[in-house]
Image 1 (cartoon, rainbow, N blue to C red):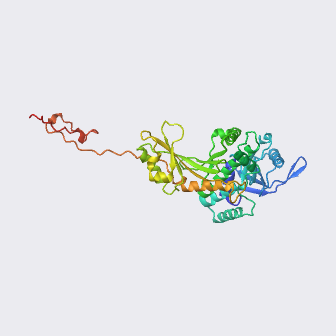
Image 2: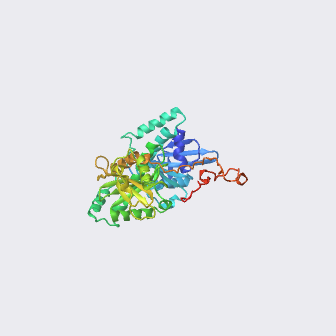
Image 3: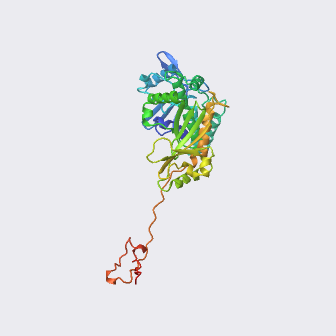
Length: 424
């Protein structure tokens, strides 16, 4: 962070640090109530009279952050007037801004509490080097070596690799339809699934070079417990885990659903249809964008002022007969849903037949085969009317003819041919 200026700023500025050179220190000792405490690191950023300081605690591998240790560091930060405590571990927060470890909220009145997963650090490093750029070649090489190190299996910076001990009991309870809202396994698995979607977004963002974020409303961010309760209710009712991710400049939110009863992972996106043309024209507009998508993609057409599901069919059949998506030729098609379904793994870890890999692979392939090829509809720009010379009828006196041009001039203003009676 101190050696590569752009990388240090990219990590610290979102936390409130000024735009300046980053100073870093390791194992700085502090005294607290007669005890000697040594955080893993300290970061200081100074610009003019403003100084921002944060303590850092790091865990690697499967080691988890400890509440007591973090509360001690929060007390140190408060005592010395530091701004923040930052933790780095393989734990992934289920929601942006939410810390994976619970601490006494009274200790957060004066000190900010932030968390980076190793996946976030790696993602930020790749985006800075490969997409945003590093001005100094030597600094770019240093950042490349950090990326090489973090990507090594023995670095201790692991990917998302476990759905937790609650996964198997919950999976079995869903299959047996015995899951209850009061079961402690449900909230744990819901939070793990949210963290998995965050990790899927980080993976995808690292490849795309952009910030991929969870699809959450302001209410979801402000009231995470309400969202958690809603997700648990859905899981108990129909055995589904659902969420979404936002990718900049795409046609909509990429929705991800894990149907535990059916054993399928479903990825989908809603696309607004054209606002002009016949139903068949609007369907063909979508088909042209899906020319490289597999035949197994499911399409659903929604008509204006209608409730419930619309006409749906597989892409292969619609290619042969677009009329399959037209339930009523008299109604206007306003939008489409594009979905793909893949087998869901059942194991809690990674590898063959794992739930985590099945979700990650489904998200990646759906984006590559479908989402990146979809573009929003744009209306055709209006055309300028060509001016047509007006020739007055021969039987009209010249004094009665206007010689000034008008936008209404055109061939339709010529006098009609005289009608000759049949008897004449």
